[in-house]
Amino acid sequence: MLLLDTNMLSALMQPVLPVEVLRLREIFARERVVTGAVCEAEVLAGIAAMPEGRRRQALERDARLLFERRLAGDVLPFDRAAAAEYAVLFGQCRRAGTPIEAPDMMIAAIARVHGATVVTRNARHFEPCGVDILDPWEGQG
Image 1 (cartoon, rainbow, N blue to C red):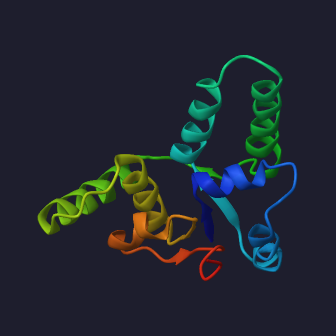
Image 2: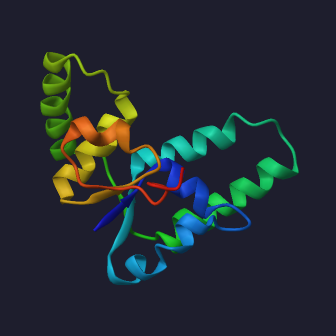
């Protein structure tokens, strides 16, 4: 199972898909592709913070299509199991002196609960969390 991080969702909403994302089509065809409710919230919040206008309207439409059609039923919740996993991660990172932003730690907790690989451009945000990571941009300079 592949859990798309917020930056991957943003890439999927581009008018022209980045070549790094296009390279993943074969993997996407073989694996279940999901995201987390936290990622959906980050995308929607980013759009909501934009000024009114055509660009914002287009992104609202694209986000609706992404979450309601392309990922229909495949947005994993931050539930009680994820909350418990978050607490474990928080304690580990705090003791190790490794600061991680709360949304990234929540995404990692969801991935750990479901045994998912996090697909992200920001691998370093997730490395301390003990999740499998797939970075399509890795080695692209």
